[in-house]
Length: 260
Image 1 (cartoon, helix red, strand yellow):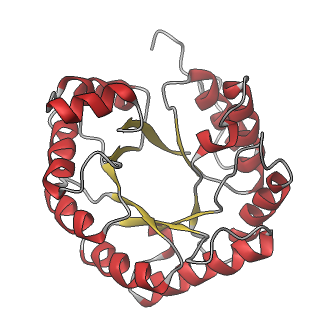
Image 2 (spheres, helix red, strand yellow):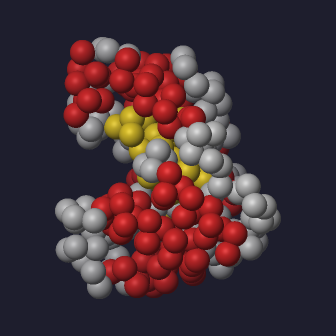
Image 3 (tube, helix red, strand yellow):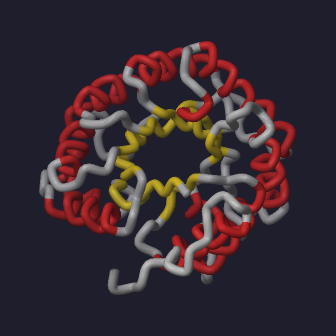
């Protein structure tokens, strides 16, 4: 399971304040915590705190100063991406493009040039489709454009756009069906990813909902998630789901002891 640590994001108060104060401590601390928890990538999200690419570069540099885990550059601005990708020590994950042609034209050449992986959201300028078929159509546009740009399927992460269960409960089955169909696009198939925390937005039992949805999505073909990698129960559930789907080889030690 490809796990992208969500915590170095200015949507969290401690990270926002750290960026405003140019205090590297919280960024380095969360980088180390998430890397120790087994994150495959560390998402770095400047958000609305600044439109200065130099600030994003600074954030990435703080992460890379303490861990070797590659970063996920989380921005919807190609100008920021173009600068931030230059300071990455390892090929990053780009988060993200949409199916809108303007976005594809801006983001895909950068990904191809730097051998980066890229997340493609199943959305365009008209909004998020309500149906599984609509999501499949948009995701297919992203994959086709990425292939044309020279990006192999194994570097493409398709995102069905997870909605909050509390407010859009009818969307859950559509999302899971879209995930199942994404697996049929190519051989080898692209990766399938989601921003997991969205599903429990506004709910009381966030961890339980995140864990349950993740297991169900893995059963449909999901193999990556942007999530709280420090939630041991969540990570263990994901590992177990992958075993059940015969994607990993069983061993009694597949879950590490809490003290490990």
